[in-house]
Image 1 (cartoon, rainbow, N blue to C red):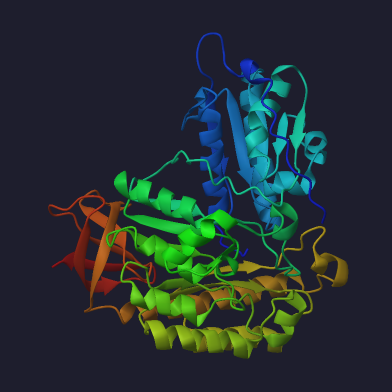
Image 2: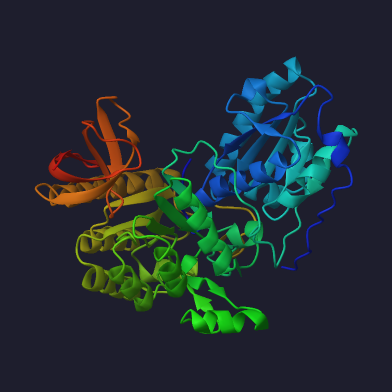
Amino acid sequence: MKDLIGDLDFIEPSTANEQQPALTKKDGSRKLYIESYGCQMNFSDSEIVASILSKEGFETTQRIEEADIVFLNTCSIREKAEQTVRNRLQHINGLKRQKPELLVGVLGCMAERLKSRFLEEERIVDLVAGPDAYRDLPALIGQVDEGQKAVNTFLSREETYADISPVRLNSNGVTAFVSIMRGCDNMCSFCVVPFTRGRERSRSPYTIVEEARQLFQQGYREVTLLGQNVDSYKWSPQENNKARLEKAGHSETVNFAELLEMVARVHPDLRVRFSTSHPKDITEQVLETMARYENICKYIHLPAQSGSTTVLDRMNRGYSREWYLYKVEAIRRILGEECGLSSDIITGFCGETEEEHFDTLSLMDKVEFDFSYMFMYSERPGTPAEKKFRDDVDPEVKKRRLEEIIRRQSIHSLGRNQRDVGKTFRVLIEGESKRSADFLQGRNSANKVVVFPRGNNGKGEYVNVLIEDCTGATLIGKTV
């Protein structure tokens, strides 16, 4: 479910709160349960939702059986993601039969795509809210409490939730997401994101830096800056902020490289990651900023989607195979061979030939990604691809090509990890190993999972680990 892809006229959302008195039980606070599906942005949005509703007296719970309100924060990137949500709603329907007053809501991209149709298709759903409508949730819940169905799927040109401090859900207390922008202006032909999340809006760098500073003070040691395309981050100040920016050594606008530097300066012990980069937009200024600061992690998620220029053209990705390889060369040159590099790959896109498929395999051989998120193409309603092309690759051919891509990636992942055996890395401990309480795990700068004996170390500490062995997914070592 944790996929990393990416991955109109707009009406300002309502922010009415007149019905707030209806939001709390007479016998105490109501309990909210949220499940998140899809990309990291959805998980970050769920934390914003929890924060908005906590101010209205809602208490979050990790047990769905305790909940008075259940929200599913959904993804529309592929048909399988939507089907997962519909299957989950069937299970929740059983809970609602036992607890008729249970309020069920669908949030996020699937809500935005289907809008009020969702209430007809899934009758147990009481509330539908798109990604820009979360401030309106108290009023929407109030409408449901009064016996109505509630919908707000208006998209905004302005909403960034910059003033809201997220409630960290299921947090390990060490790593946290920080949203820096919303929406996407790219019109990749296969993608629903521009239609479900709207146009790009960049958040003020001052609120981002302040959130990072507060997280460090609370004990967090790593932040991941999130955006559908972080490289297109661009914030323009109001007139009264220009002098402040110039004094800080920045131009009248702040681009992503400058934002990275501002966050890196919060504290040397605060690691900085980001996701997702777009091959057509990532700049050498970003790479040089990464090289200059040790605490900016040397890892880039750079979705290729395909290794074929002709497929990339049909996908409307805005770059060629040669351009992608040029960007990879710049990453290796400026950040070194140890810089972690991952990708998204879609197989079986409209009209894909065997030759185009082999182009993807050969691109993988040239780059040798540390890991990839790999999928069969899934046609999404309303996208340019659905309107312009036929989804004409046989499902069995898609499946076979995907298996070939997965096998190739497995070889590369193991090979890249084997090169790390004998090296020592600085690792941020995130908690116990999933397999044994006698071992701890964390990640190195290149975003590789490292497992080692517990010793006297604890969560949130930095340790140096000598790598002694590996699998295709994990580095194994000991502290030195």
